[in-house]
Image (cartoon, rainbow, N blue to C red):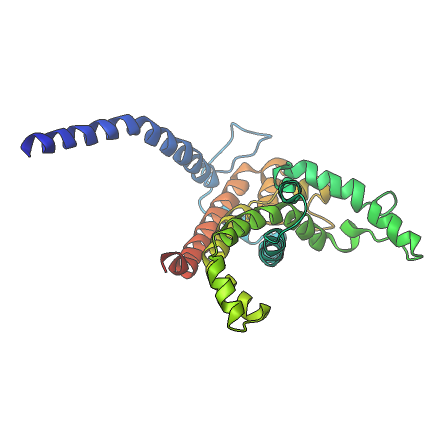
Length: 295
């Protein structure tokens, strides 16, 4: 027994030693950018005068929070994340139920339904901007004018809703894939027994399917929220945050401060604020949703 104990301890020590380079690399990968961001957030650091950085105290944080675009950026971020989550969760649930039904060529149809998730965000945004939503040459514009209505400038009249629609189109396959996988693990005998007892489709959905998919819906919401807080490419290539600040979210505001106004100090302060807000959201979600995962 003593020999086995020593052997076990030796193997654990060897495993920790072999894991330590990867752990140190991961910590460095996370901590170095974070520490540099915090460091620059307390400096007057401008890219046009990179050698003249001096201690700024909390001024960068004050200027970023009191920026007229800050409130709009927070509101747009909440609207973007909330709108995409509602559309992808409800739409993904509906698509998962449809794809789980018997059909002709199920493999091909499922691949086509999931394919948009593998398209780069920049490419997706450009396709929607130029091919579909262009008021003159876009498909939607041609349909509207063909029906005798005036063309719609989606990014001029409904900019934020257009961004929400594009991002939802990109993330809908992710929700569909997760929910479809969970739906396929549902016990069909339970469904058949409920049908034999006279349950209609509403009862099947609300009392059997939905409770079974609760954990998967939780995972979809949690993962998507983390990534949706940093949406940037779709805004950059379609609206550039406009018109005005109509589509400026927190990530794009940090980009404007750092690279367009050349104020790295204020941009870094915005990055620290974004990290704090993201962690608050993550803690809130883990407390509210994590209970469902442990159930």
